[in-house]
Amino acid sequence: MIPTTGLLLGAAAVFVVLAIAVLYRAVRGPTTQDRVLAINVLGTNTVVILALLAAALDVPSFLDIALVYALLNFLVAVAISKFTVDRGGVM
Amino acid sequence: MLVSVAIVVFLAGGVFFTFVSAVGVLRLPDVYTRAHTASQTDTLGAGLTLVAVALALGLETTTIKTFLLLIFIFITNPTAAHAIARAAYEEGIEPWEETDD
Amino acid sequence: MIEYVAYALAVFVVLTAVATALLRDVLAAIVLFGAYSLGMALLYTLLLAPDVGLTEAVIGAGVTTLLLLLTIARTVRPSGDRTAERVDPRALFACGALAVVFGLTLPGLPAVGDPNAPIVSYEAVTGYYLSNSYADTGVENTVTAVLAAYRGFDTFGEATVVFGAGVATLVVLRREVLT
Image (cartoon, rainbow over all chains, first blue to last red):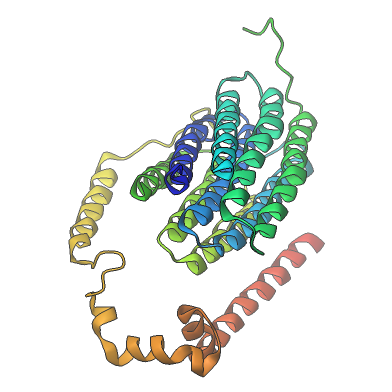
């Protein structure tokens, strides 16, 4: 029997490290769209980490939070994109 | 036993593709190429990992939420990347060309 | 294993917080603040406070980001080419000293899930809620039962305040748009 709990937690740790790496792009930019893109990837990572934690710790209610996150992530990405377009490149 | 092997395979695939997408977001030259890796590789990585999570949770009603999450990410992630790339284009950011550096 | 996830998350949260404070571009700082909220909510969830994590995600990453975006739509970006803000060494020293002082209080806190922590061992209050909240209210989560049932009027007052603030914001924004 393979210890899946440890594997799931390990995968969650790897995902957090990858999130820290992607953070470099969010800080450096250079354009706003680069940052939004990095945050979008970070949000997807967050959703996956939450799902992994739900499976590893056996708390299925974390999946509800993951669902809310997925919705919010999409909302924020689209909101900032529309916002910068509507401002006509001024921002 | 078979389920454990499947979980390991899907997890490894998910971590690999998410790693590829992180490298892509960090190393590719401009926002359009980065949007490309963010929409495709990252979606695949998240999808594979979520399949592994669904297998680990087993046959329960909560597993349906994992599949909802899976479907939702498969729809929204490319859409968000498309919106971001479109915003970049309408703001007049020039695509990268090989002569640039 | 789980503590490594928590440590990595703590590093992530600190990095996003520092980046938010240092970036000169307001829009970039707002975007990074969203990332900070994501990490913070994950940390709350990891420490088994999913309700706080959910609130942090909705308020921090969702509502605050949108409100700040609406705000900077009516202001200007700071000029100049520098990406990072200049740091005043005296201010940095003051902030560092404050952080150290707060950090010194950390050993006084009980460990996470400590059964001998005062809040748990004081049976008269905690024990009552733990043993009776389901029979009284029919809510499975004790924290939710206390917030939404025992302290229902308190929470109702908070919701009224939030609703009033939201309506006031909408009124102000509508006036800005019309004139």
